Image (cartoon, rainbow, N blue to C red; front, top):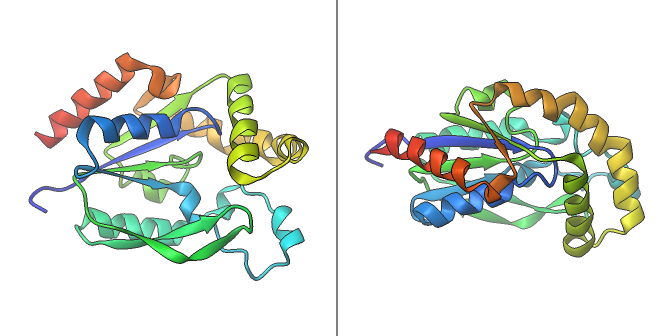
Length: 206
């Protein structure tokens, strides 16, 4: 690559609108310029545990993420080297046999609830974003996603939210807001924030 890539971190609570911002950036610059890496791809592989035990794990704690692999692959991409990103199966809480091959891009977007929590990742980032969305809206989005896309029951989503998602948000996710350069309310629906972000990226790229 002729120039050093830009690394953008997008954090925020579950259902805050992180993905919508990433999609807006893809739309603005095109897939040839922007690649998105989801934190969710780097969940630890729990295939060594019984399925019942896997469901009981705390997936919102920082230890649930294979941060060593995540950091290693980001560094490789920043150096212009391709990586093979794991593909995670949320129904079995294990990594699938297939991988997602990622080539270097000019803009690398990392999104996830804990994207700004880890110092090793923050040190790599050029722009750090926190998406701030009211709790009730995030909770509704979480239920809809997990039931429709991940085959969960409404009650299981509620139980998980109360037992781990909410307390982990308060302990780890919300405090990471203070490491951000930009706080965006309403996610990708905030057109002014998206325009400002595009201006900042252009200033670095060009």
